[in-house]
Length: 423
Ligand SMILES: Cc1ncc(COP(=O)(O)O)c(C=O)c1O
Image (cartoon, rainbow, N blue to C red; front, side, top):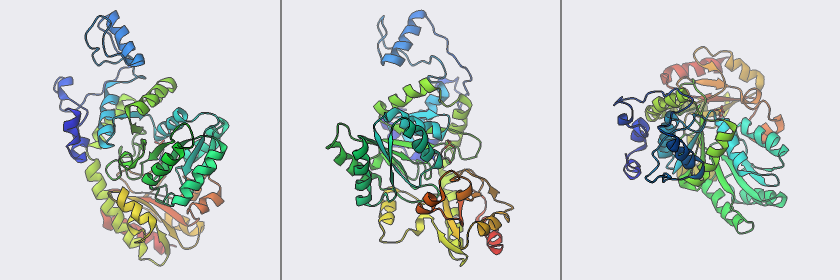
């Protein structure tokens, strides 16, 4: 399927088949899993030409004619990875995608490929704790200055964070997560792009904008269409969709993704064939899973919001009319997603009593699976973030995070009722 033809198809359609041609595999309707670590060359000259193509971007063979597509060694690339990358690039509306063996491998590659000692980076907060740790420990140790942005919908706050970063070193990267984990705080991607363009006039390079799109995924938010350079997804979550794999991806221009693929080859963080195959299968149902999970999440959020024991519910559909966040949400997102948090009146004791009543729901970290998961972020996913910083980012002692799955909504609501009765 040519690229221009694929662009005309709906994302739900692209998610089903894009990136796999049955003619490449004996007509098999579904892709085989190509479990091999290395690939055999037809001749010594072909081996040299494949390496010229991979390392130097050569397209012409030394003895003439185009260099055919081919693989060298699975750490550099393999057929199932190529299929997933083509599909994610189509879904993310990108020129290319790099696939990784986890969301954090994708995120750390973005940082390592685009930051050098002396540079500064601005990141939104709250942000996934792994990303927070990456920046506050490893990247800080490597001499990168880290500046925090607490209100990503406020032009003054974005400009102030950018200026503070620039005072410490060239601002090379905005690392944003929107909606954020676990409070669903919004960041205005177009605003970040505007500020990045302003910064470009004051230093040698325009800061790149990387957006972690894990919470909504490619069907509900398209960061590149709003001005991001890189769209990062922990495929472990909604794209994998069954809590049975770990993977990540970054989509963007051919130039930006080539840098990430080179780094991936050096550090060996590629996605393996079986995981890539599982993802191809999972992506086929992403659209129907998203629709069902979003409807379930709305029903549960509305139920919780009516109970006086609940102080706050961060489901995106409840963002106040007229607020800056609401305007960004309406411009940037095609739906409210199905992960949100709610805060019980009281604190940790009330939250723990609620959790200990769960029979159907699984008390576990992670999100985006077919089953509903619930956790207490302050003592699990965000454990390593100091309490004061958690509180400043909206994570309270009584906050619980729900990743709503595909069960019948009546059963989920009955479970919420049991939890609330114990509070
Ligand atoms: C928003 C977000 N980004 C990235 C990650 C990291 O993904 P992985 O666990 O696949 O490394 C997570 C994991 O929970 C996440 O919630």
